[in-house]
Amino acid sequence: MPDKNGTSASESTKEQLTQDTAVDSKASAPSAQAAIKSADKAASNMPADKTSTADKQDAPASKKPAAPTKKAADKKPAAEKPNASKSASGAKSQTKKPTKTANTPDAKRAGKAAASAKAKQSKKAAEGANGINQGVRATAKYVRVAPRKARLVIDLIRNKPVEQATQVLQFSQRAVAVDVEKVLRSACANAFQNKGLRTEDLIVSQAYVDEGPTLKRIRPRAKGSASRINKRTSHITVVVAPRKEA
Image 1 (spheres, rainbow, N blue to C red):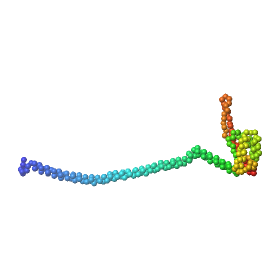
Image 2: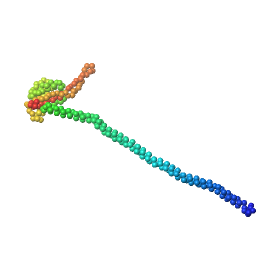
Image 3: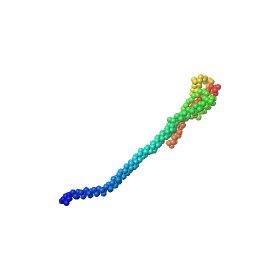
Image 4: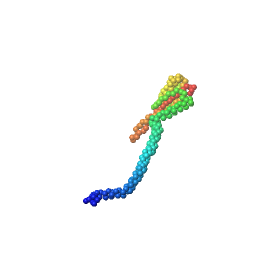
């Protein structure tokens, strides 16, 4: 229905609503400004927080590479220690090798051969200094006779001229005299062949018997027992020299 002023009810209501909204907007303006200020403050505070958090995040990130480097630095000596131990073990093995080779049978045999050679050289030097090794010798080894029996004949020709010693051996009744005479004749032949010495000028300067290996045999005896038989051997040596040197 139109009013007295000629305006309708809808228009009046519209005006009232616009007035109410204006009042509401005036009333809400301070609150909006306060909200804007608080938002600005929050926005101003946000970068600081972000930067702080970023710094906090960057700080661990920067520390993380340092930690592996320290670990690597700590691990390097540990890696080097086995090398040092390996080198030490290698040096020990190198030092021990000669001891192992020294204990081998071949090394022992070589050492014994060297020792026997040195002993022979020293013996020859001593004999040369004493004037013993001036004659010519001959040796018969592994003669099947006991050394005790051979010495009984050898003692008969020592320090006698070769001709006289030969006669003694020819008339001896012991079986070993044949072997001793062969050795004497061989020594005279060596003196004539090597040094040109005549048999008439020679004398038996040395004559000795060494014991050789023993052949062991067994003879059956009563009640199933057995007795040992020792078949001994001898090494007969005769040395002849000129009479003046003797």
